[in-house]
Image 1 (spheres, rainbow, N blue to C red):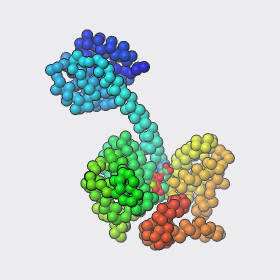
Image 2 (spheres, helix red, strand yellow):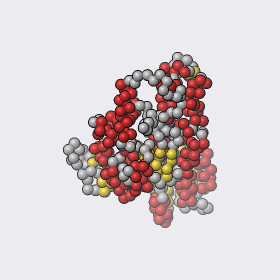
Image 3 (spheres, rainbow, N blue to C red):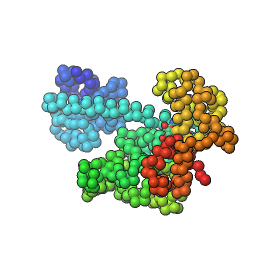
Image 4 (spheres, rainbow, N blue to C red):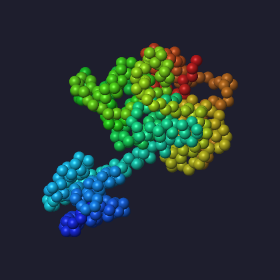
Length: 453
Ligand SMILES: Nc1ncnc2c1ncn2[C@@H]1O[C@H](COP(=O)(O)OP(=O)(O)OP(=O)(O)O)[C@@H](O)[C@H]1O
Ligand SMILES: [Mg+2]
């Protein structure tokens, strides 16, 4: 029932024989090595699930082997067998992460129980590694399409910070892939197997944001019927992605700054400080420098977040990526729709290259999704492309149709936002709608850039 592969290392032939017989009896596959060199050879050719090694051996000893395993195969649990006089080194091996140690002669019943645990841990670790690589292929850089010089710059910047834990500020217009990049940064970093938590600061109602960030104790305020863990705590020791950070109000900016500086938080209504260890990624499509001048954004918080800044170029500045992206999105959606669509006509491609894509990659993705769903052919042609896109490239003015109610509504929202220099909260107050409603109008507007008057 076991079938796990165990490597036993001992210079004493008799010890090897006895232990391997016992383990084989418990239906383990046993590999034997009478020295560390032999053991290393075996470990490189067989898939070993756990190692049981003697500590004192002539030549390289068990500790030496353990150090080797620790760097090259950190997921393999190691159990030490040690003679009475060498307990000190066994203890120091435990400190370095050995799984267990037994004094010779071991209690074999206990040894088998511990070994079963080690094998179980190994199994879990390889499952996690498997999931991790799945996550990496879903969220890693292979998903970020782009070969244009502007995107190469982005990839270079990301490569440079891969192994660090610095905070990163991701800038870019709507739909340029800020969230996708944040995920990729996390899932290729050293924290990749720790949590990745995203909060969209603009989508959570203002009065709930503080509790969302820091959590609360039971009874902290009316409605706090039970304790709640906030996102800062949840993300620790991983990555917290604060999306649309430019929309945060000043008092919360101050609280976030304090949490970053002191590396601890307090739940609302709580008195205990809770240590947090997070990497912060933040994104915004606002001009934070300008917000600082207007006193809408704290300069000190900006400098904390802006240790590294990565700016995603708008699609109109990476047109050489359009063909790649079109192909990528066609593949993605025709797979989902179970269709065989290969490409777009040259005429469509020409339109795509001329259009300015105010909603950036999200807009392109939506256009392709719609075309893939609607078309009955194998090649997407102009009839599958929405008329706004076609109109969008023919300049303006000519025969403008009557505006629909929806368009007028969206225009009103946009004008209000512009009137307040992009401050959505103020615009919402003036229009008498919630910030959330503003947000959903903007989404309906398909992420089009807000036209400046
Ligand atoms: N380089 C890319 N390659 C493939 N797909 C991309 C790329 N960049 C963005 N996308 C896709 O475009 C869509 C929008 O990306 P994302 O949500 O990351 O943008 P954003 O900058 O966070 O937008 P917003 O400012 O509106 O929040 C997503 O579906 C994403 O998968
Ligand atoms: Mg986003």
